[in-house]
Amino acid sequence: MQMISFAVLATLIQLAGAYLRYLPFRRGMFSGERQRLWCYLLGWSLLGFGAILTFLHWAGLSLGTFKLIFFFGWIPYVAISLWLIRRPPQAHIFVFGMQALWAFMLQSFAGMAIWLRYGSNGSELLTVHLLCYILLFALVFPLAKHIFTALLQDPFPKDRVLRLCVALLPSAFWLGTVLPIVRLTFLPSFGGRLTRLFLPVFFFLFYSLIVEAHRRTQQQRALVLANLRMERNRKELLEEAKRLEENTRHISVLRHDLRHNYRLIHALLTAGDEENALRHIRAMQERFEKEAGDETAKKRGCE
Image (cartoon, rainbow, N blue to C red):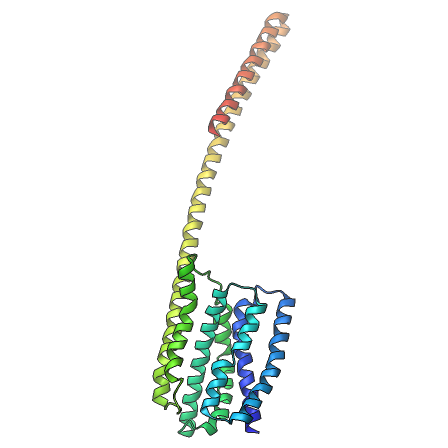
């Protein structure tokens, strides 16, 4: 019964990790892609449950089998995500490293909670340890969901080498915490777990500071660009107002000239001097055509 409980809890933990790794990519996936992904993940979890149970019946439940299951149990889930989520490998590597660090922190907190409750971390408490992990995962899930959903919102650096280094950074921190305990044949004490916890906690704090600094930089840049656009629009509006004022003044002068010319033409026609009236009309037409040509040439020059 203990082996079945252990296999169930271990499978749930692997699915929880797969869900966190899925969150950063969820917004960019179609509904059909999400359904297909989870059909494969849930299908493998059934096979994985059987594999874990078979392995436990063959090797027994111990610290060694616990490490093997959790050091290698994530590989099929990550392989399925790589196959079905069509995103750059650097993004998958980065997300995996962040989720691995998160899982390591929860494992450490669960171990410390077990130590505080029972005063030891024997192999007989491994199932309780997994149950405590799941409870902690559920407790901090809102924070984890917020972090992992926004994990890939900021683009990676354009430089290829720098992009790969950024993607590998969380995995490097994770390996730095995991490799020293690979060959341990005993469970660390409360103090040992607390010491190992500093590295991933430091990384998450460091990452949070970088994200916040980047967010503020982007906000400041957006504010500067908005101010520049507003200043450009203000200048354009002032120029447009100036042109409207000039056009209004020009129209006013033109209306005054037209009134004067109409009165003069009317006076000439009333006096019977049709020849001078026609001459005056032709002069007005030539002047208008000349002014229109000058205005067109002026506009072309401005363009």
